[in-house]
Image (cartoon, rainbow, N blue to C red; front, side):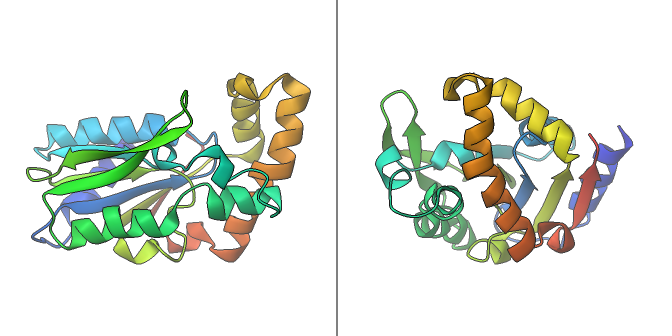
Length: 205
């Protein structure tokens, strides 16, 4: 795939640094970020890079911190779904400070609990972070390279509504996405303008 070759070429041309590169795979729900990040990881490893993928959705907080908080649901999703400062300190700053280990709050979906997990990055040359809202103001400056996966809204919406059966029936899924997720994404597009700030945009994958 030519677009993958373009991404790899861009990353190969990054200025040499004495810590792992932090590469972002940004995009909205249902755009195909997880699939593409795995393909990019495979290509980078073929080029000789040691790559660790971190899925930002694995670092969300417990339900009590992001539901029924008194804030609008879109705000709970955008601002409270993650401990933004914790991730800033323990992921982004830790990499920039050349730590050999990251201690991150991974979320157990079944138990609704977060637990600290250590990740050894001592031999790592690239940390590929995949997820939504990566270019929020608190995090953007820490990335060395940002990819944005831009997928048509109707395609993304169809994917997530079909995928997220845990929410309930199709009508319940639609209502929740309208109240919570899509409004949060609209805020991100308007306030952050991630496409404008990305290093490379991949469209219609």
